[in-house]
Amino acid sequence: MRNAREDLGRDANVQRVADLIRARVTTMAGPRLNLDPSLAFIGRDEDLLRSIRLFIDPSATRGVDRTSTGTANVLYLGLLLEWLGLRRGAVHGEDTLLAVEEPEAHLHPTLQRHLFAHLLAQPNRLLLTTHSPHIAAVTPLPSLVLLLDGVAGSEARVMSPDLLTAPERADLQRYLNVNRAELLFAQGVVLVEGIAETYVLPALARSAGFNLDAHGIVVASIDGTDFAPYAKLLGPSGFNRPFSVLTDGDAVDTEDKEKYRRELGLKRALGLLKVLTDAATADTYEEALGVLQEQNLPDTGGSRTGRRDLVTTAAGFGIFVGPDTLETDLAPLLGKEMKATFNELANGRTRRENFAKAVDQVSAGPSTAIQRDAIVSRVERDPVGKGRFAQRLAAHVEQLDLPTRIRELLSVSAEQPVSQADLLGLPGCGPLLALLDDLRRRYENLPLAPTLEETSGSSPGEQGTST
Figure (cartoon, rainbow, N blue to C red):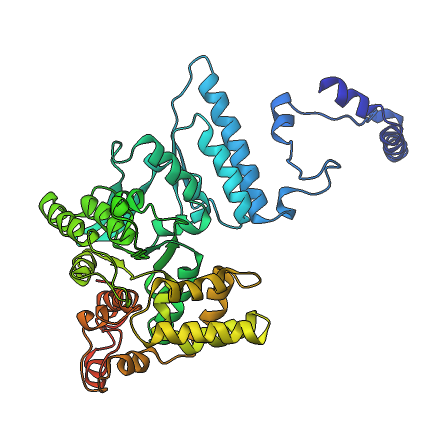
């Protein structure tokens, strides 16, 4: 750097300025002053080092002040990490704790994921506070600490190290992509099997005047039926967050030797009960389920004797099991909307008429597996598809007056209260409506289909308050 300063001092332009100054001063003062001025670049080496500026382009024309806040934050973190690395690697190295507050500000979501996946993989002692599901998605589960409002102030909750098996932890880590990581920030979670439910449930809630987003309730699809790891993570031994489960009943019939493949939805509920409740309750449920699985489905349609009791038991623990699958379960409630949706997506008069006939048959009363399959097979066929069908159906559902539709199905007047038991008894859609009813009672102190008296009796302070 000393040599560089001398080279700059010999520059022709610098020398010309020096000559001009020398001539001017000599003319002004005369030869007696003995003044011979020159130009040079001075300064201690450390002063020069401290004068170095960081630029964001190779031509060194744009300073950090001319970039975005997010980019400046990335540069700052990079400098900070290099500084910490040098301090740790010094002869008398230091042990440091890096604390970063909400680093996601002004960063693109994909950059958040990439940047902090790198940061979390470094040998740092790191304390990071964030509201970003993108960052939470790449954070190891054992490293997560949830800070929640408690009765006496903030409460911290962590996952027990031995709560999950190694495969479960690895699977959950993969599952916690951006959408699913939202459940870590939610005030309430509804776990569902697939994308169709994530469209339909919020739309049904809005059609009843109940906004899930307003209460921080997230409907999270797990893309399957293995709810147990999620129940462990969110349950009493994990983060202890309020959650519910909606699962298909899959009440199929099989040969006697395959009886344990019957009532797969109730069987999934058994696995969840073993996580959420005591052994005696789970054992009693399992015994009743075994008796139920011995029965064949009625030839005329409908459910096995005693099934409703098991559905009611599971609902008491936040596990709502439908009779069959979402599309057929919705038919008694949304038959008109389902037919309108199918007509918008599918071509061919005959195809539309056959779908409408299948919906009417299932809506009319106890249905057989063949009748229900007539709905599902047509929805699954191109160019419709379950996800696309549910997406379009949601637009129709939001225009619905759900409380009125529920009262029509129950044949009750606007003055009669509608209980969760009433909803569970509805064919097909009962458990799904009972789930929404349970949520609304907890978060708004109102039933899903309130009477006028119940609506007027709920004060503004009660509505919208999480309990």
